[in-house]
Length: 130
Image (cartoon, rainbow, N blue to C red; front, side, top):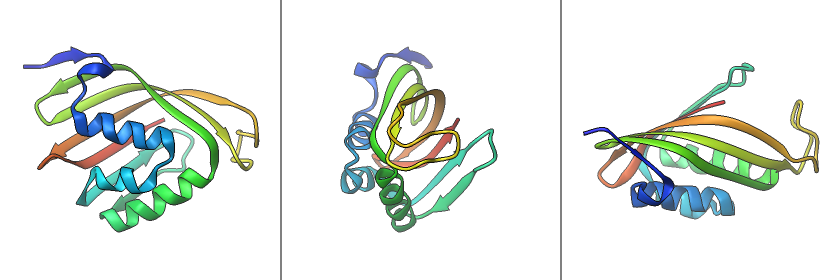
């Protein structure tokens, strides 16, 4: 059955992933994903990315972590249906370098959504929309 959830009732693997993301702990993020993970970041401004495999994910996660002095995802709403999870997130970040409209040292806030598939206790597919 589909249920709405707050962050305290998220699957443990998603809580671990978000904690690692917020701490910029790349190794802990990689530990949460499947070896054949598919990660997509779909941006309405045109910079969309799709990668496959935990090694490519690790490289991307390392690059992304270095771009921000601080970053944080807070779950506003979650819809969980078995191994499928949809998250509505508030994202806050302070870039370390100028990134398009985001200027170094200036806090940036946006709303986004993540669609996650869990398989074998790991994150098998992550699609972030912003």
